[in-house]
Image (tube, rainbow, N blue to C red):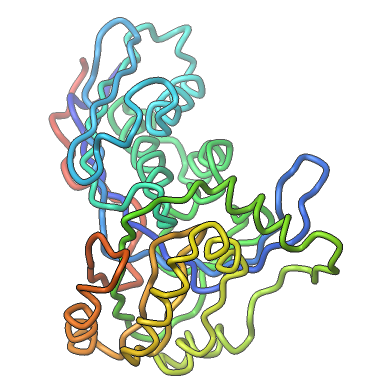
Amino acid sequence: MAGRAAVTVRAPAKVNLHLSVGVPDDEGYHPLATVFQAVGLYDEVTATRAPGGTFTVEVSGVDAARVPCDGTNLAVRAARAVARTAGADDEPDLGVHLHVRKQIPVAGGMAGGSADAAAALLACDALWGLDLPRAQLADLGAGLGSDVPFMLLGGTAVGLGRGDRLTPALTRGGWSWVLLVSTSELSTPAVYAELDRLRAGRAVIEPRVSDPLMQALRSGDPAALGASLHNDLQVAAVSLLPELDQLLETVLDAAPMGALVSGSGPTVAVLAEDDQHAAELAVALGEAPGVARVLRATGPVPGCRLVDGGVRGAV
């Protein structure tokens, strides 16, 4: 099969500017109305051809020891999904070794695992010369996790359903973020379960996207966007990790444009007025309790992209 010897794909992190969560359905899935923004903090996945239909992975970089290197790894699952789509039974040479280089926090609410899965989808498609449509890769990604299709798309987008029904959002300009990576981690299923517990016996409104937030994105006004940031999961994340409440108070005292827990947390995304303001906030918040490290990023940025096509040719 024509293809390449090795391919590297870069995938961004994400911040949920808005996350509205409904009541779980009969299958246990929560309907969502969310606004994703891809930000310039990246993982890279290098896919190299491997013999005999083998699928292996190694992980390096930040928090590498916390990422599984077996069949449960989302990048490996993504590679196998592409192989199945290509008809691996007829192509016994479809094997791959994946090298994941981590910068996105692990279990931090910024979709690091989903970014790796999306990168592996694109990398294996290019590695094996399949030329699958992006829409088909997104469908494969949706079977792996609700955030994976957005990691392929990038930019700023509204996500409905399970978060995988995407519509690009109109935005003006760029946004400067300070990302406070926690010394702790949170399990996404545990955060959703805690939200359900906290809501037990209460009426829950149908998820919808905030009109003021969408208007703020179109106007490019950081103050308006900061005032519109919202995350239904934040109360559950704080319930499971009470020190987050103190961190959020410390953040607000530093006078950002706005701040919220990203996704299921515990990373706190802090919106700055501009890059200079972000630099000042990063210094001010660098010693905040419970913060393992402070990162800066801008958004929106594109989704997964090939950064090294490797060597073309039949292998």
